[in-house]
Image 1 (cartoon, rainbow, N blue to C red):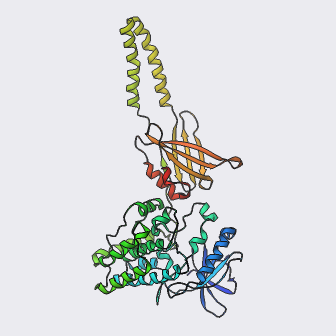
Image 2: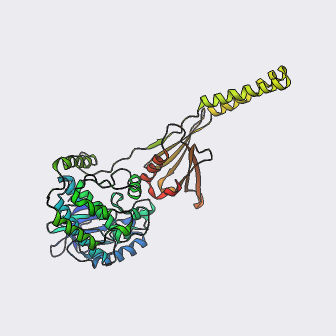
Image 3: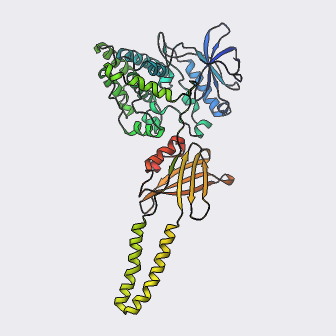
Length: 463
């Protein structure tokens, strides 16, 4: 918990706010007391989302649906006001750390603890799915470890956020490391998607790291869609059920009922209370701590990782090759003329062909060079020309409507086409030729760099 800030409200509805619990994609979460003194968690929706009428409608529908979710493995919705300014929702307060905080502080969980966690989460998801809800963002941060078992929080929020101004700015709804392949591809998300996320959560609990690794969002999503999970550190008793949950094809994943049976069978057959021998799990805890420390400043407050700008300078023209071709073009025509019409004709032709080849060579040397710069503010194309000021075109992320990449006819690189907002609402188009016939940034790395800053404006089909 953190103390309230001066600009924080002191009450929401009839609830007295006491401290900050954290923040998420939808807004700020507070620890509060009801009029009778009961502890609750109050989520206050961000002002920009509250201004979106579509979000308010979806938020009201999701709150009404989550009210009906019961069971011992979810945080009950006890109150809400979707029409307030801003809207808010109150859930029962769960006294316990998140799964992520527990694993980062204490290391991977023992096998028996992972099995108990899986059974509790499967029952919780059963209660959610019975109300025709899909969580869509099941991750270690949304799992609280209470004294009486795990609790799932924030179900339905990803659904409420879809189509808002948040997604228009390119935010990903859901956490990439725990998404299902169909969610990463933007397809319909049904109950099997939560099964896949549950498999990723159990793999994280057992090993201390997500099964598809870390890094830029685009790289993680690519691995989820196309590559097999890294389960090398998963203890043997847990491998079969986690592998089934992480099947790429939703139809091949177990149902929650089947998963509960698998967990029960594994619990009976497992005779070990540890996730792995000490030599296997020991390195994971320090690494988790170092990764957590790398995202904190000296005051201990979490800070966002700052991604460096990415610059791509097209390689210089292959001058030795062009010089050889130019020399041949200078000498061969005079020799042919000499052979056909005599020495005088050949000597006359030589300075003419040499002059034109020299002009072409100089033009190549002085041809402009285009540099592509990608950073958190957007994309810049810098046109370098000898003897003249550079021309810089800037395309902020919020103005870019689409990015595509196509191979040019010579197949030595590709054209990056940028459509950005122009005057009178008309899109403005710019093309940048990125050459790949020399040292430089590979095409897939350019895509990954762009997608890590604004994944909504690129489409893998166009690359």
